[in-house]
Figure 1: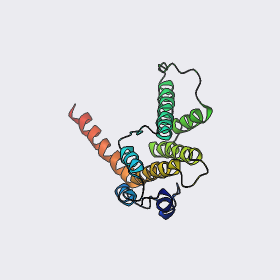
Figure 2 (figure 1 turned 90 degrees about the horizontal axis):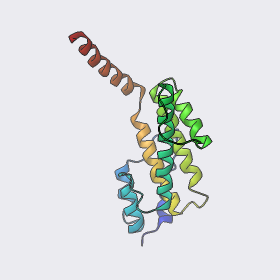
Figure 3 (figure 1 turned 45 degrees about the vertical axis):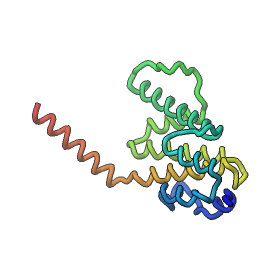
Length: 175
C-alpha cells in the first residue's frame, strides 16, 4: 500500500547550500508505488510546469509569474523603458529580490538569488505538517531547484562566456 508518510520520511534532507542528493528520475522511480497514483501523476507533471489542478502548485506558478514580472520590470526600468505590466504595487519581498537580482554583480549571483528566494518560499509555504501533500510537492520542487543549481558552476560559466566571446569576435572580424 502506497504511503506518502513512509516515502517522505525515507528521503534525504534537502538544504539549499548542498547538492541535490538524487536525480529527478531516481526521485520519480522511488515515488512510483510509494505514493498514491494521484500524487505520482502530479509529481510527473511538475517537470512540464503543470499544476495538475493542485492549489499549492497553482500558488507556486503564480508566485513564479509575479517574480518573473518583477524582474522583467526592473530590467526594463534599468534600460530606461516603460513598464508595460500595468502593475502598480508589487509584493515587497518579490520587489526586494528582483532588485537584488538585477543589482547582482554577475548573472550567476543573480540566478542564485532567485533560486534561493524560490527555495525559501517553498519552505515557508509547505506548512508544518511534514507528511502532507504540500510537503511532498515542496520536496519535489526544492529538489528541482537544487538540480538546477548544480548545473551552474563558475567553470562552465567562464567556458560559455569564452565560447560566446569567440563567436562575437569572429563576427566583428568578418564585418
